[in-house]
Amino acid sequence: MRPGSELTVILHQTRSPDNLGAVCRIMANFDFQRLILSEPITRDFVAAERLAVKSDHVLKALTVAPTLAEAVKDCVYVVGSTSRTQVEGRSPLTPEEAAGRLAEESKRGRVALLFGGEQRGLSDEDLTHCADVLVIPTSDVQPSMNLAQSASVLLYLCHRQGVEPSGPPAEEPGARLGTLGALSKRMRETLLAADFLNRQAPDHVLHELEQTLMRSRLTQREAELWLNAFKHLGRAVTPETPRE
Image (cartoon, rainbow, N blue to C red; front, side, top):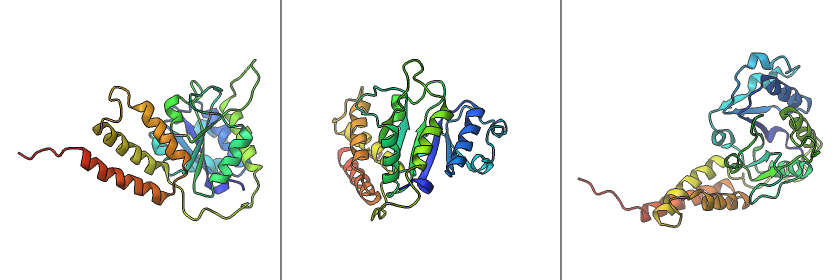
């Protein structure tokens, strides 16, 4: 199955209008159309047109998100591309595995391929928004790839997944990351109030819990159920402020 219409390309903190234009052209090459810029450093879309040959429709239709959380909120699955082979708590996918996983998860809803900025790539914090990470194997002589080059490798592999679905869609849509983000916020508040999280360093355990939720492949209904459960639990563990 080809992720096709369900695939979103997200460029996080992109600096170069040339890279932006080149990615638009590559997306047009393989018939992908949904592009989001997350916290872009460049907004020079006119300069990007120089390399966006016959892909104006991609460039003009892109959307800009103020944060990475906002960019991924409608997705049920995100895989982040990194040149780092060692990411704590993660076993990187190969490009072929990532393309296959994107195709499979697209049965549940919108999926995203996330690329970091040219200077520093994706940070550990950025990768907390990803269910998986992928690494393109490269030579030790030059381990890092240009943004547009990485996009060409990965979008070609996504295109190679085929055009027709290989199986029925999921019976229920998957949990959107926006809902899981709201659940994470409620979990933080409630678990801090219950003294479950270390107040000086709550993020490590919280991120583990978030990754568990991502791997569990919740449906949207199940995620909303968890969210409502934590809303009620939060009221029980948080004392009400007395009225004056």
